[in-house]
Image 1 (cartoon, rainbow, N blue to C red):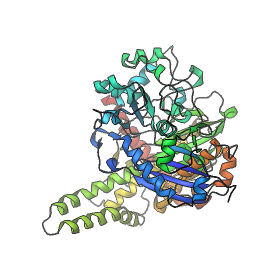
Image 2: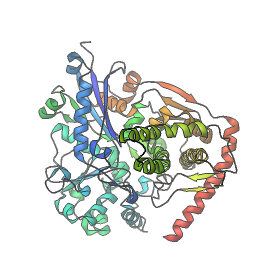
Image 3: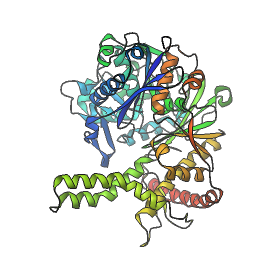
Image 4: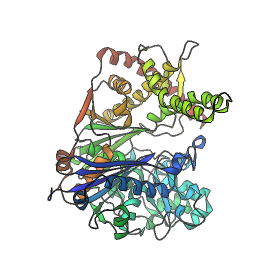
Length: 561
């Protein structure tokens, strides 16, 4: 035990933060905890009808303290003293405005309740107009297309679009903001005590995939591009960053203040932050040309390929290609769907509306009984829908749905697009619609696989992680049938936190490479889903209908524009 080293992986998800202490010699989980975001859980600072989703920085700080302390409480003092490093993964792009000291505006007097001074969550789509302007300028003839390594289309979910939108709509934020920072960069800066915006080490992963950083143009797109886009952006590039760092590099050492707050040793190394899906790919034993699907509220589809094989080719229609964003010295490729599990959650809330209204207002039951009944319904409704939907035969002439309820991320990002359901009759039941929604998410995944293949990037295997992959055999079997690919499920339920622990082990020098860390600390696979040939054949026909409906809806959207 004396020579053993441990690392702490921290994974900030959409609803909560997960922390995990891992034995770096064998991957054993020594302690773990999950802490939800209090304000987010209360629905604060969000307006789903306008696609506005914000999170308060205090939610991140308070949940980190709670989760780490709960994790540390499970450990012996000997293990605690041997914790060597900590790395962080977060959602992204999730930026926030900061002052000259690197303090988020929401933590300053006068901004405590201002959503524009808070973290703009990855799924916030308030900047659709700004994204369109960025694309129009980048795609002008006789100029450099700064979106070429971002799939050729900049998204409203990303860094620059969100910044420009906020500067336009909030004068107070515009006046107070010195710089901006991604969530995955701010937490390591906070833990080391270096929050100077001009010297914070920024994540290559976030910069390359979300902010158009690339060595071809010396980092971020040049000042001339941003000042031409909007004078409000003039000078901001100089207050951001030029250099970026991969997740195998250290940011620094934990500050005395944070070591004391979290109960950690004072010599803990803090690794460079990263976006959760990319770190999750590391925790999932990603290897060249194997797609890792992070399946949760949305999906991120990650791949790596050797630089010499990708060369200078720009892969169109995806969410970016970045040297070192996942594995150092390899090209990291990202795609994804804007809604996956969120689609099922939307349908659950839709069906729960009458119950919440009628039972909630009923005088026949006491308040405690009503609360327990509604909670039981909400907890059980998807399980019941799954059971009923699993008994429905695949109908090649039945209901077709589109998975664009939160826009389309990949291929060819278009956040203006909306979902649709076609083929309803008076005989349609709730389980029929649920099955169609599940099939729609699988069809959306197939579009991504086809996009990579069309761009000359082969796919040799598929690995799945995340809550949906772990919990729903029904969804995963349909996904395997639609993709006509075997899908392996990682055993670890917290793969992003595990990947962060692996990154910490490399950043602190315990292992020289991610491959070494993966071999020692990996969890292995718990299950593999194989496509059922007759189902795969039927889904090929339904997939044609999905594409036809998608073409129609997209054409209608273009005509409106």
